[in-house]
Image 1 (tube, rainbow, N blue to C red):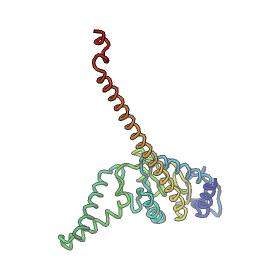
Image 2 (cartoon, rainbow, N blue to C red; image 1 turned 135 degrees about the vertical axis):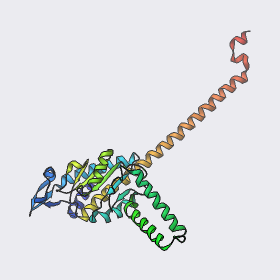
Image 3 (cartoon, rainbow, N blue to C red; image 1 turned 45 degrees about the horizontal axis):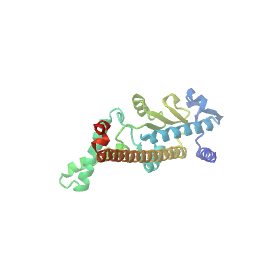
Image 4 (cartoon, rainbow, N blue to C red; image 1 turned 180 degrees about the vertical axis):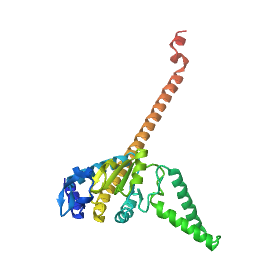
Length: 277
């Protein structure tokens, strides 16, 4: 309970309950709005906490099952937060621009990342010493462009189990790709957003850097919890496998001793009919 109260306090202090102007709202966000103040919608903090806790449970479960999470936030307020928080839990993120086909044409994206590795190898080994100045300039620009757009997902070798989206209006392409592939979307959306675009909606101010930071911080904690559960499951599976192997080895030794003891008694002991004869 104390932890929940601490989250609520951090959310309120970050200003996550301040929505857009009443003239810019999406009527579908009505259930998440508490009221109005000075021409601005006030988001119901209870709905924010409910969505955040639901998202944390789902992320922890997804990561525990062995899947990863990709964070997407290309707006200025989200970029710094994702680049600071997400690498600490070794997850994937997109902060520059969502390239069309990042998920639906993942093979091409992987080929571009392979090209980035090749260019980095050339730079590391010879620093483009064997290339002309013009070619070196072209290759360096290509390397910088690929790294800028794809560096956050360079270790993503498979489809993520969930996408965390900051501002559904800005990341429509990413949401559509996730929907097409059946990937769950967890979205921080303001009063001008469409909650139908989110599988798990976290209503809140998506223009406040502090509000984004609190939400991403909590979701990253859920990732860390899921990783811990994953490691525990793997350790338990390894221990169970080794114990079953040991039991099988012991049973084979016991069987061998039984077979050997039968042989030592001789064919007469092993065959009653032969003894009678």
